[in-house]
Length: 208
Length: 208
Image: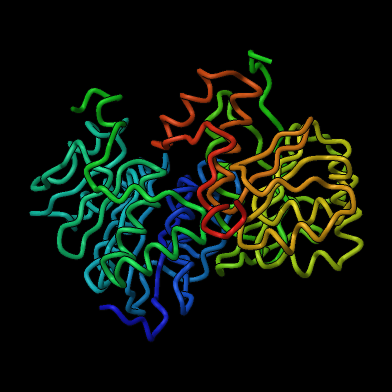
């Protein structure tokens, strides 16, 4: 895919205690595309959703909706601990993942995908401080300790927080090529870590 | 200031068309502090505020309020063009800036501060693609074309979008020292550009 005639439909999953940059870092990068993507915010119960840091964002559509998505973005954050025990949330996440063309997670968002059974048979990564906890979830997931992000088929999973921006640019590169990626990074004045294997935080946290 | 006994009071100015990462990048970094800062979202008219990218965030307090702030954070975005012609907004911004201990802007947020008269006699920077436009505002501001961010007294102004994260870590370094800064960057899995003068985007845009 090198042309981009139709705006991407991007759905971001919000839940109380989501991490701000996990959601808005990738959305900033994807938002640089031309034409601008349609960014919908999804939640089990639409309305005002409080982030882990306090500010509230508005989810206007149900996670359990049927609208097909080009990209389903799943942030992490402390709120993932609660949603890991919420079967209705996990079921809606699994169904929405099945119909999305691409599923992308940031930080402990991959814990939710693993628990929902979405990552079975896949390679994935997650936040490096939460790595051992997340790697205990998902019976048949190959967790990669040292990676900025991991691509496996339609699944893109990134390391903690800031890594989501690098993954999002990787996703733009994958979908639309190097020029679109460079343009998005330049407009965001962002220095892209283009190497998926770049991960000093694995070593910092005793994982490599 | 090396101890951090009280949570910082951080107020972020929202307006329709604010840029997502300008606001939430710095808030992610500041949110890593212990104890966690109190992050209040301010607007001329509190309520749901639509970002430049589409997602809405909730401003729960008026910009014109009297609560003293440790940090006033001013994002940029396409919505700044409208607010530059809004005297009530600019007056509230000026008053809130006067009482804040630190005023920090990202991207074209410095255009709002300049137009409000807050940066008179100061050095400042802004988004590199909007530099010439922003530099036409503010009669007595020394605009620095090549800088990741500029510190002048209580005023911290950053370049475009992603630069706000580097500035925020610089602010943490300034307030609480290198260990607090390194800890925040590590928890966010973020590679800090610690050099205020690092700015490849100035050259990309013909400014150096």
